[in-house]
Length: 115
Image 1: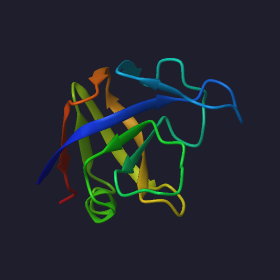
Image 2: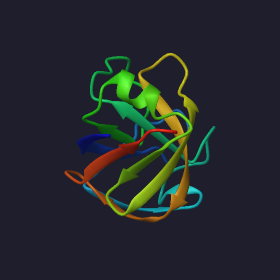
Image 3: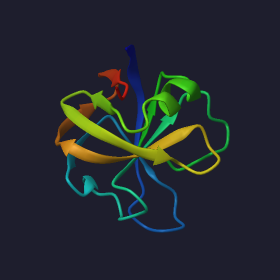
Image 4: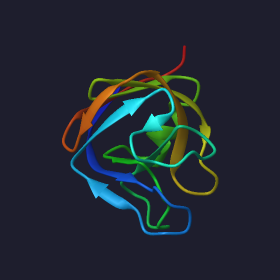
């Protein structure tokens, strides 16, 4: 089991436009409040990323730790995310929302790997 913290939160209300940086956000079944629908409700990215990927949460986990969480669960603050797969070529993952709630920058991130 790995533990880290939320480093940043982002929503992208309009396709092709810059995102908004937040200090806290409500997360529901469809994803983050104010975010537009996309391939998955939530994208979680490793702090190691340098690609400029448009992630919702940047967390203090390595790319390997995120990849190991596929088919497992990531708890982000009050929120529980079911990790569904990799997010293309960047060091991140896509996730569905298992339990909604509030996430704040600095919240603890805990990975429960499958198995």
